[in-house]
Length: 287
Image (tube, rainbow, N blue to C red; front, top):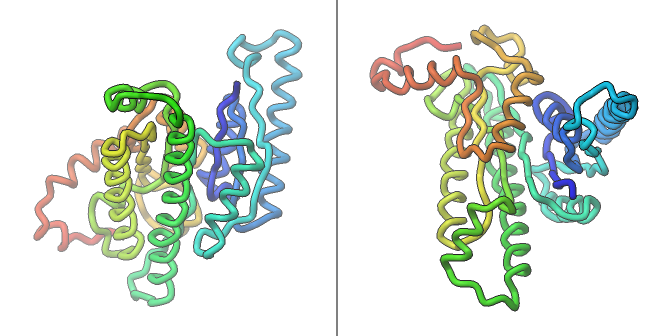
């Protein structure tokens, strides 16, 4: 049976690419975002790609692995993560999809904001902070409830429940944070700070899942600078494409990674800049 994934923030960029790639790899996918017309377009385009690959498969021109792939974007839901009704709408999307094995959170905003425009800072905090917690907590609690319902009526030892959390049936929450959360970036204060918040929050949820013996795993995805609207017009080096990032994200999810920095060049960069003393770092010009 195909696994089921919800992708939040699937209207563009990395979220769109991840939704499409998951479906192409055999997942049943539900997508969400603010723009209905874009959700419809992503669903239509992805399913067309899968249909064309299926036709090729029937001619025997691709591998057995692709022949077994029967993924599809099944449904979509208009959701604004900053809205109070977002949790209810996510529940509705889960029902449309018929369940959920993976919640992938790609919804986020940010700007370079050297002038400290108050509205930009607050919108970033509202989306990357409040909206993030609102949706990730909803997914975590849904997974917890499913686990409890599955265990109801069964006499399981704590050790068995702990072992279950390491098994193949583990639910997963995967979120795009950023390498910007590993050091403060003066050109984007709210963005960098909210990404640090997300890093810590996901670590807390990982610990809570173990404390409560829940089969919920967390994947913290930390891309480097990606060619999206978030950094349009910036001079950040070594910018990655959403397509390349999406491939590494899906691989990390399927491999059960806890933290994944994308790509290897940024892994080295982050390791190096972590060693820079604070008094030096705060005097650097990074923009």
